[in-house]
Length: 204
Image (tube, rainbow, N blue to C red):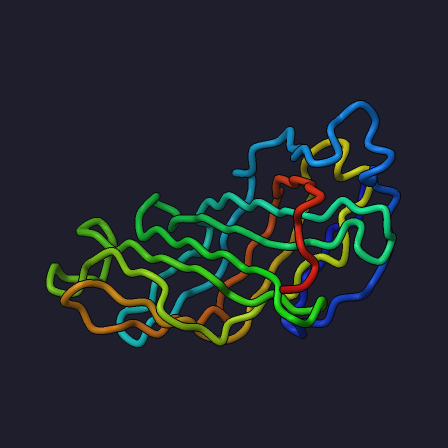
């Protein structure tokens, strides 16, 4: 069994190589073809999201995680994770959260590039006057991504992950006060889908 990929909040990645199909040895597949054979959804959220108003308990909530990685003939780039997308809800299927982390100028850092938070009448602690669909405005949040995707991960199309975060994100909604989301109290564990593509980037 593969070891669980552990992603710490320290934001440091370890450069490593993997026995991946590259753009010149990917079998009969087109060099530019994306490959994924598993639909993420087997992950769980843990912890509490503080918002500056009512906290949201995501412990035991379901999540879908998708990783996009680079296929390249050069070993220093082959297998680097370009982006991480997370979609989840609280344990009762309400209070929906979406996070996307993308590349920066530092190949060891992935920053929050998109986020949304949907709070409706089924989300506890949020009266009608504060409900809404909140969208990404700004962020300092970051994620330490897995150092690489291995050939075995690419072959089955999914990988075990353990993700944690640091920093905050600001989200806004029409006629609502902005919310500042502290992501450091959240984590995600479970299974993520993986998709490889030669167009993926290791740096911004």
